[in-house]
Length: 101
Image (tube, rainbow, N blue to C red; front, side, top):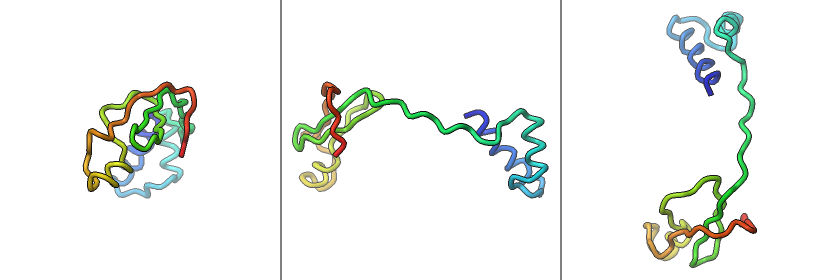
C-alpha cells in the first residue's frame, strides 16, 4: 500500500507545481528517485473463513473475518420496512459448505 500512496502523492506533487501530472517522463523520474513501483500487484483475496446465516430465510453470508452484530438485509427490508431488526440477526455457523446464493 505504501507504493500506491507514494504513487498518488507524486501525481499531487506535480499538480501542486502546475506540472503535467499524468504518467509523464518527469513523473517516472520522480518515481525512480523515490524507489516507487509503477503498479502495485493485485492483492490476493484471502479465502472465506466464516459463514453467517439468517435463521429466518436460511441465506448464508460468507466472511473473511468475524463480523459484528448484523442482520439479514433482505429480511429486514421485507419484514421491517428496511430497518434493522434483531429477529434477523446473522449467526455464525460451521463453515462446512458455503452457499453463495
